[in-house]
Image 1 (tube, rainbow, N blue to C red):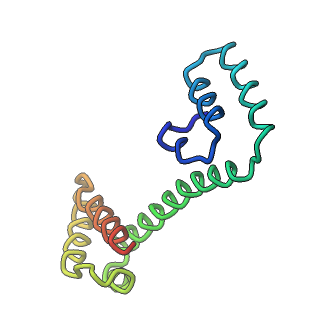
Image 2 (cartoon, rainbow, N blue to C red; image 1 turned 90 degrees about the vertical axis):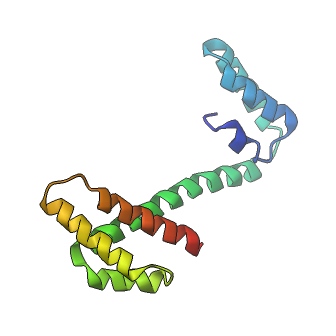
Image 3 (cartoon, rainbow, N blue to C red; image 1 turned 180 degrees about the horizontal axis):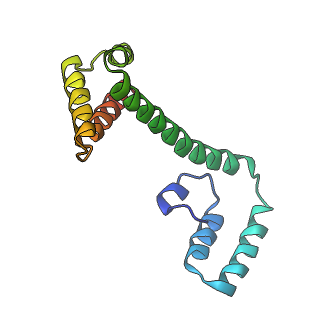
Length: 137
């Protein structure tokens, strides 16, 4: 019910069920309750496995993307803390990475941290890692 229409269109739903779900998203209170009962009736007439598989795929996609971003954040933190040893790891993982630019950003991030300035370079390191990760895919 809480899915966007663009995501919902990708689900293997019969036309009448898809239309009923779209209607339910517009309805309020009692009308929504009745529409949900109608959707339940329609769902009992079809096989739920393909729909469940599509829903699991959507949920896992978000979880994977979130986990990937957390890994990149941890790598950024290691870059700032450890310096050259972490840069070597980044270069192994992403051969297209610019060593000189990474070192410059790490030095700048440490300098900003010492001077209590806004973490501009810290954010830029993350954006660089994110771009490298996207290019690697």
